[in-house]
Image 1: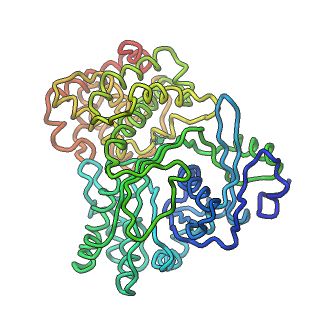
Image 2: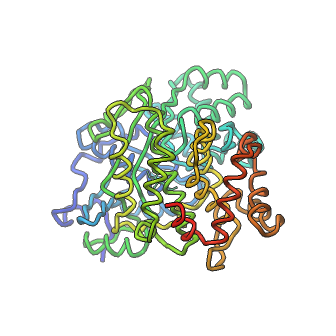
Image 3: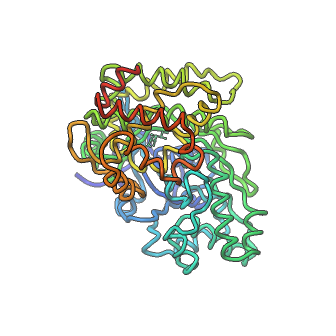
Length: 490
Ligand code: CS2
């Protein structure tokens, strides 16, 4: 079987959509840092529609900040790849052409900087995950002791971190008298534009006051809310796509029919008309971000920790298990939704019902283990902000506490059946050591983990109501197992 390529496009089955614009004349207007599956199933698809509409100045150059795997897969395919939209109702395949170039930053940081500094580059978008911001998750401030930040301060012309690349590129643009690009964070962080702004501005200040002032005064960092479920691609997915296309695609991406992008409309040097592809522009993204982070991601993390502990491999398996769906529905309705700012005209009840349906999608094999990754970076905005809100209102949060207890049990390193867990988290080794040193029992385990200030801040560990709720929830998970504890609180 041959590979997907520009030449192979004409032989694809008629049901597969493909680029029909003049790709040879498309130019790079966007550099994307973090060329992963999510960006390729989300922003690249919106941009594909813009190119298809004839606006060819917004092609994407995708940069991987770590591994060469995506580039190695895409280059032999002329940058083309398949997005497979899957659901119980059937599948829809589209070949995407909007990623015109792919680069691997550690191989050639200079090439990346040259592209970032180029006049045509007007937007730099980011999906570098929570940890890519090199910030303290509890405060949102730049972690100045972070190894990559220290490296980037010592070697500004060969950076490693996303903030390091942005600051050096902005310095070069300033020196060359070229207007700065707009920085578009597309990560699951609250006020993600402000978080990006805070870390980039701080790093620029640490390098040089004038550069700091330039970044602070001249660069736009609009916030966005992004939403589409995109599980990691498996070999079975590759086989399915090859079968459907009649050619091999080394790295297709699997996703769901749902997609949403809400963007703050602040692009001083222009932007693509992403609204043509269904994005919405607004002056205030924050209510949408909070809604999505707390309802979707908060439930996702909760079901993943508790579901993984109970032995379930995928999100849809968890949703099919007794009492989990009821538990999540009640958590959203009773504990999360009341903490959200009003969104006039928006049906929050329908949104919650739709989330439960999306989680049930039987065609997406979204692994609980994948979502459980990097919990120390995720739970502050997914669960703890909501819990703070409930505490301040004197309102109960027993299900949220159970989600948090699931995380505590998970990072201690074994499943309910005793099998070891491969915990992936930048703080994983420290969290595990804290649990091991503390000795057994919910009181000691909870106390040990609550000492991690980057996650819990100073306020929560000092709050007796919080400590009691979390310790009680952990005791329940330990005594009954995660499935039993869920059933008791459903
Ligand atoms: C998930 C998200 O992996 C995770 O942590 O919760 O990636 C989730 O699928 C997306 O935010 C959906 O938009």
